View 1 (cartoon, rainbow, N blue to C red):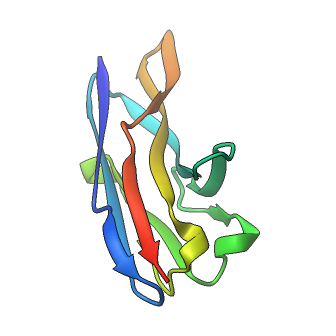
View 2 (view 1 turned 90 degrees about the vertical axis):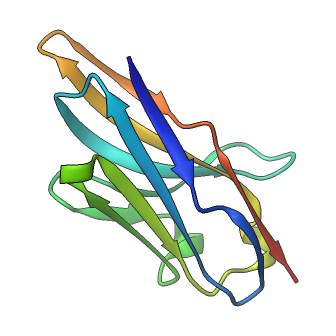
Length: 120
């Protein structure tokens, strides 16, 4: 069994910053891609940023230059540093990880979500 636990969400004024964390625990042999998604009310869940095991990253156009994804492989943790936050960044942010548990078992896992609210 694998669990992803997120932390770091909250209420912040526009222009402010937050850092989200997501720690994976349980039956983990290795972790491939780790990513952050978000879902705003009435909208579909969208990819925000992804980082592979080698540290290569990709970002949604809407957050490029403002958000930074990073990971600590020793801690099985992924981070999302969010700067210059805008009202439209308000959403529930979800952590996602592609986890190998054994030679025959590999699947995607999701965190429970953490609310980020940006006041204008």
